[in-house]
Image (cartoon, rainbow, N blue to C red; front, side, top):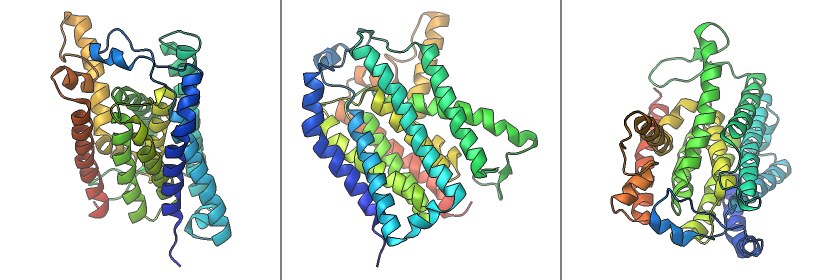
Amino acid sequence: MKDLTIVIAALVAFAFTLFSGYFVIPYLRKLKFGQTILEDGPNWHKSKQGTPTMGGIMMILGVVLALAVCIIYSVMTHNGFYSELLNKRRLITFVAGTLMALCMAAIGFVDDYIKVVKKRNLGLTARQKTFLQLLVSALYLLALSYSGMDTLYIPFIKGEIDITSGFGLLFWPIALCFIYGFTNAVNLTDGIDGLASSVTLVASCAFMLASGYLTIVSNNILCSALAGACVGFVCWNAHPAKVFMGDTGSMFLGGMVVAMSFGIGKPILLILVGIIYLLEALSDIIQVAYYKKTKKRVFKMAPLHHHFEMCGWSENKIVFVFSFVTVIGSVLALLPIFLRF
């Protein structure tokens, strides 16, 4: 009998995320958890004022439920996922990645809560958020080290680099910045309707293909559950959005894409798969740095998606183009794996 775990993960996450919207969104409205639009954003975004936020909880619960169902199913059928749960390295990588994403989501939830309930529009201070994110990232890397992770894959180089001694030890501080950076980059990408969820859908599909090819079932299920949840959320978040994911959702997505890249033991591929995340973050950094030095702007507005909005692109066009760029980046990232470079 063919193993249906991957399909189950996607369907459960999709169905729960989609149908939970009928209950969660009205409840968020009842609690008056509406988004506050910042003054420095595009003027036309002010029409979105009051749209329910913190909807990322729908995706989070969808993924968690899907993983729980898959674990129960695997115990009953003793399939490939069950075998990996008995493997120390696979189990720790899977559990640590999931917990890391959930902890990032918790940081985002606190940030959203302060903004919405406490009426402090900027949420957690930059220092508070940075400390918490770096702490979670460090604990995640500690778990990976304990699991036995000792080499790093680099495309087009035969063999892998030892990260337990010599120059290889530089991997760990770099990885800390890598996790912190990409988590926040996904957060920056969540600026227009459907963008972060659509780009992450493509990214999760890319890592799903990589996991399937490498026969890493646990990571494949993680990717499948996230892909299903993203599709379910896009149904509510596509323009015009009926709900926003908030930092609760975007921080969760950030943690998940990092977990998926480490889950296949090839985090460096996230640079290409997550090219849009990277460009969004770089555009923001360049804009701020250049403005401080010259009082002039490189982009009409940052992050990058706002620049294209100011150029007259519709939100749907930006989502389509950015998702297509992610497809191209994903293909380039997968080539070394499938061609065994």
